[in-house]
Image (tube, rainbow, N blue to C red; front, top):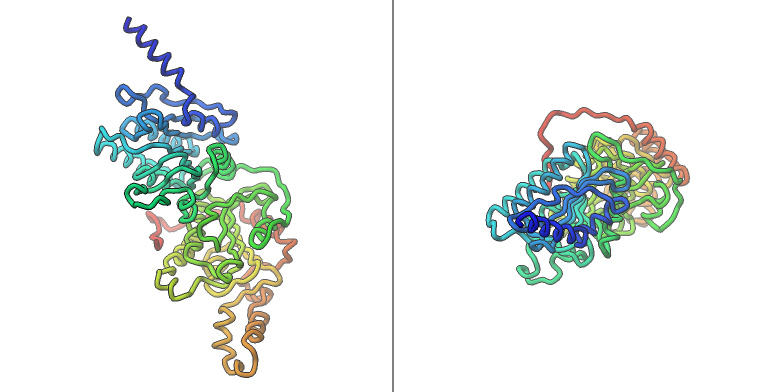
Length: 461
């Protein structure tokens, strides 16, 4: 009789498997909807753990994943769920495979009290252990609040579904209904991608996985080479002139809009792209844009993905408000990220490169391996406005400032003069830029750098 009851309960549980959003999301993630579920019958007392863990292929690449199941005890995090997810992290570390976490939970398992908080702590520690070893992508598909939001946000990339909620303190506590929204997460840089539904979000994850190496000792998958073709306007035209056609995947589009970052392919190989947008802030880079770039460069460096920088920048924002807000912190972090990164770094100066902007993202101090400039680029030690004030002060009364600035750019900012002084490596026409970048990346493909032994650098915040 007991056996019959056991089999009846088992049949009931099996009939529910695959019917919840947690299972459906894994089906959308893994190739052909096929995967191997791990610890299927793991329990939290008489109930399930509120999470599904699995192994399978995403875009042909072996990956581990977990998907919280809000239909089981509200997807609450407790000791059992934590142990189940931690096994995913451990397997990913042992086998060198990416981890995708899908979040949809109403909080911690209240009956366990402080133990539930320790469960989150165990996962945060486990995530930190594999950070920089294997890629981690979070997908916020439902509620993700408090400690769960911390865990989701320390992944390399966070994708959020429109209508989901991501915050430490919810609207119920803050009194602001916009808190935790996907729109706000995109605006403040918490979410790198916002998608309209689960299917689009998980398709984006699959595209990203195809751009990333499985771990820090492997290389990213190579795709067919589709030559670049100029499309789009402004900074997007600059990007598309260099990268393989239709290969650019932008991250954090709504945050720090004066900078564009994302993954793309050059001659079929994955690269990280950084581009400054001269149409924003009068060609100046703001603190948010600098922070966005520094975070992305560190991600690329962790997995030895080459960084291609397209520079068109008059410098860093210098208004009184920016200085009072301490924008120098973000600028210092950006400079430090470039200088510390040992991955291949190629810079193409497509327009302006004035003063500290050149120093931080194109100069030898930034450790740039190869720097190319367009023939009509301007590489100046000083911003022309500042230069005229100091260098041509005695001529200001007789000649217009605009004419003097043009003279300074033509005489002191010529890329050919910079090349003569070995400040840059080559001057090219835009139509030849893609091949120059391909050649530079090929030259640096075997780059290896030994660094001073230390725990880690101490970057500004």
